[in-house]
Length: 87
Image 1 (cartoon, helix red, strand yellow):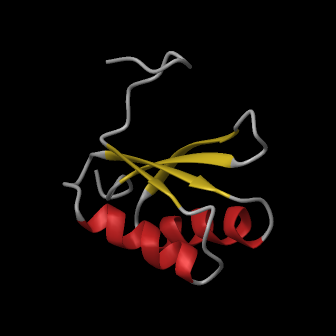
Image 2 (tube, helix red, strand yellow):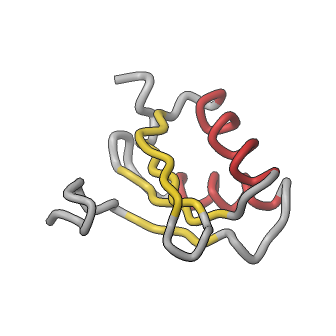
């Protein structure tokens, strides 16, 4: 199924706009653990430390960030493929 932006629907979503670093990365990591390699997670996060740190930490762990877009309400939508660098 395609999403509104014309891309593939993510396999899972997590909203971490109500938590602060470093819990933002912990919640993202837990959500990724529930997915299989190659599946996509969409993470909704805030400006500042979360958008600066979470994508970098995901890349450091071997995942592939495929998009980072600003949502209409000012939050960020990050899409990551689990284990994307290993493929």
